[in-house]
Amino acid sequence: MAYTDDQVRAKLSALNETQESIVTVAQWIMFHRRHADRTGQLWLQRLKDSGAGKRLNLIYLANEVAQQSKARKKDDFLIAFSPIIAEATATAYKGATNEVQAKLRRVVEVWRQRQIFEPTIQEAVEARISDLDKSRSSGRKPLLGGSLFSSSNGPSAPIELQPLVPMQIAISKAAVAISGSVSNANVEYDKLMDPQTPAPTPPVHAARLSALLKSLANAEGAVSESIKARQDLIGGLEKLLETNRTTLANEETQHQEIVTRKTTVEAKKRDVEDGIMRGLSADTLGSIVQGSPPSDAQPNGQHEPSTEPERPQIEELTPPPVESLTPIGSPHLGGEAAITIATGVDDIPEEQSNHTQPGSTVPPSFVPADPPAGFDLLSSLSMPPHHAYAASPTNGSAYKKRKVEADFDDFIGGDAMADLDDDVAELLRAESGGR
Image (cartoon, rainbow, N blue to C red; front, side, top):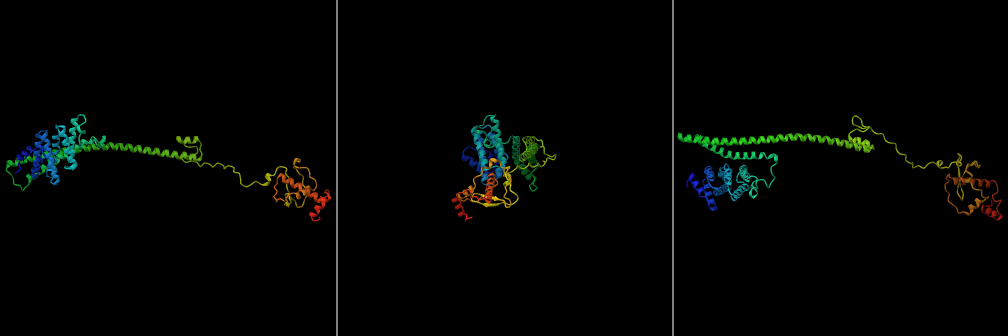
């Protein structure tokens, strides 16, 4: 069957909501894919002239044709539907019942999931439906949670970027219009201006030229709209950029001020720590914290080296000399060396040359009464032998020294056994070897 406009209108009029009817008409239309542009225009016109229920069937038909073309990698109808699909979907969505609108949203969602159309075309379709939802709701919450394509489930655009959203939507719509009108104008222009094409009769040529002028005018208007939309978007972006530049300059100034304050606080912290190490007073530390330099600060900010405090007096480990421990009034030995004579009682130092005792300055209370002659000698015989210890210049040793020297003088000068009994004296002489 030959392709004519009447045949297309008849197929579209006989279309119903059954799957068989939609598939049959879709196969016939795809068979005549060479006339995809004309079929798209007739389809859009039929959709506008139909009621709400018939429009849904026509959207189902377009969906079938588009998906089959995508699967078979035949882009004829995809290119033909791209300029008009957003307008057609919005026409079918407007004034439809909630049930029909939900079905239309489901179809558009399938297009997004399967990427049937280009992203710009898909965004334009969703934007048109979202605009209709907003205008119909009038502040009410839309049915089914609002538009299926709204960003309610995801993060919304920041407040600063919201003025740019309508501009971007306008650019998407303009891009859709350009893709169709410019392509049609270019095709008609190539056909009419091809030198190899035979020239038609003047009336037909004039009519074709008029149609070409109309297509070129439509393409020009679409391009002008796109240019205006892009200029508005660039103006909004420049305004946003200028705002961010001003904010950036203010933040850089704040950053520099904060860095300066941080450096000042670090310097004061070091001064306070240095003052603590140097043992400064609380008043001096307070003046450092308040910003005034300490008393030892130089004009260039440096500190004078503080003098070291005197070292504390430490007790020496070396013992003091013996003379410092001798009590006042004790007898002093002469410059000559003393000879230590070992006896059974103690080590007694004896001078070599002079046996005369110097005048003693010891108080009388320290000198006991003289014992009887020969008492020390008898004591030495009755006492067990002792080890000799070095004499120390104390009061007791000085007393022993004087006492032994006096007894020795008496022993040398006279007979120490004169007052003893004859038996005792005889026994002592026998032990001493008969002396």
